[in-house]
Length: 429
Ligand SMILES: [Zn+2]
Image (cartoon, rainbow, N blue to C red; front, top):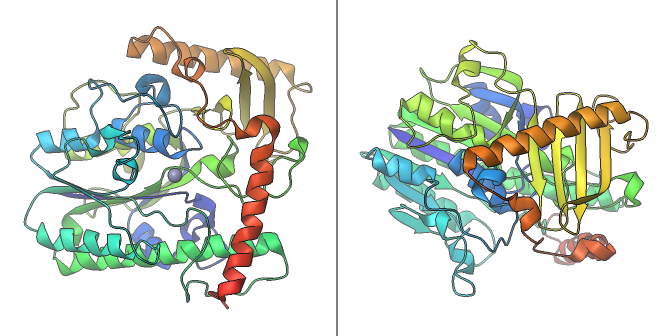
């Protein structure tokens, strides 16, 4: 039994060929997807890294784990196992090429749960700042452990900002006089780079003779804003992952395992906590404790159309927010001073997919209905987790730059700095 999970940081689903993007950013992932199963509407639980990875590997929402923000100051409870712990208990070697813990170890020694139960946990600093040395390590681990049962988790950093794709990674033309188009093209170029890494991993698994024995999964921790920032907030140019818009939350989810995972696609609403119970279902593992997520195997088999009719998310890094999304609408609450709601936003995602026009005063009944569903859902999560307080409201945000809008100005300067640096180096023609 081999499991290879590639969680690409900051990868929007809609910038990939297999999700309909107009540029050829992902021919190698597209080939995997054509031979596997694609979930077209998979959503992160948060706009930031640590809540997303924690949800993927625990099968639980931030309301259960308590991990609500990046730079969180709390630890994952020991009673909530990570995927690596479960895999190890089932006899798999556990291998991780990841920086979620090690990158900060000397400074803060935080986020220890990311390396729990891993036989190998390593991340190589590439002198060029790229992921190549880590992909080398991934391919080496695949060859070294080809005769073993293993779980291999790889966390490529690209296409996280600053967007500086290596030369040759932008096989498309764009308007270099348009700053936003320039930023988007560089983001896309980084996807091209990481997609080439996926090709190397597929080749390594094939060369080792284990491709068809391997459950290969590709997903992401969160997306990225590419200038879709809300007009109502007065910002038109932004590249980061700082709120609960779909561009920050909709991530790819592709699974391939011939003979076990059917070839197909589903537009069912699914979410990061569903990954762990899906893996357990496919491998016929008994989970050691209940999780929040639902196995997607019945959807892939065609036995169920969907496992949920709402998805849920929190933001507690730059601002304090909670949201609920149905297939057609999204409601978010922004909090200030504990639990007081200072802003409600309601969007019609079919008529207004960029979430520009807040309908909360136009459709108050719908907003109230979604609020009631969100409140009930949170109460159920807290009760199931045995928590007496809501971690989102109890924990302070870990960056306060948004309070005075300084973050947006900072980001805008950063975006221009990316362009300037890249042009100075003439890296991309
Ligand atoms: Zn991230």
